[in-house]
Amino acid sequence: MVERTQGLILRTRPLTESSLIVQWLTPEAGRIATVAKGGRRSNSPFRGKLDLFYLADFSFSRSRRSDLHTLREVLLRETHTALREQLASLQQACYCAALIEQTTETETPLPTVFKLMTDLLNYLPTRPLQSATTFTFEIKLLVELGLKPDISKSKLTRGANVFSLARGQCPQGHMALRVSRGQKAVGPSNWRLQQRLGRTGCVRF
Image 1 (spheres, helix red, strand yellow):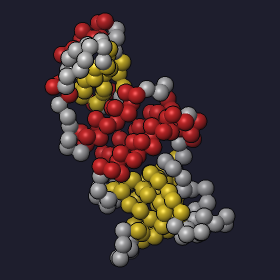
Image 2 (cartoon, one colour; image 1 turned 45 degrees about the vertical axis):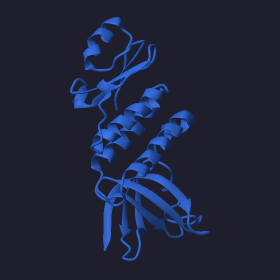
Image 3 (cartoon, one colour; image 1 turned 90 degrees about the horizontal axis):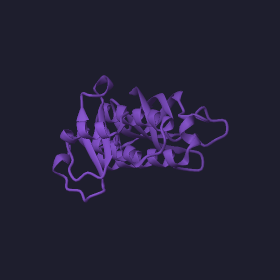
Image 4 (cartoon, one colour; image 1 turned 120 degrees about the vertical axis):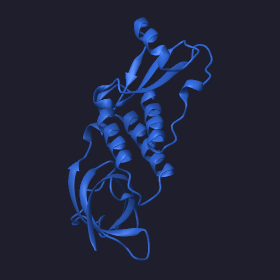
């Protein structure tokens, strides 16, 4: 039976001299692995369509014996070219992709995680590199997995970065990570004071 979905390529690796294994993140099917038979050949119909963080509509046939399915067709939607112009941003995206692979199960629907990753890929090329972006992704992924940490109970040393997590005060209800310096406590209660002092930034995607 042939299934169709949209997916984001998290990783590729050679299977044989002519074939390629493609790891996808999809909203409905979750993380799945497909084999692109002949995908490494110069005359392959997959040529130029299978690369890191490519977004595509694709069809595949499920295997009855393993979790490696057969890739049938690929319709490329987005290549995220701008992301490849900044090595540091690409490294951040690779770290987040690896984090998803380590914290989620295969072939389990992941619609919110899929949106989180696609939003990140669209966000990275538009902003200067900052470590808070990675931290924001980690926190938001934990929230989506039902493991939201209680940041308000965190204890920080003087001069450390302060992070507070809030929802509902950003456009479309997105979650934002607010960053400030030189504070000793963490929590939404500090936000108004930090805003008046002009020492905060807001990372959202």
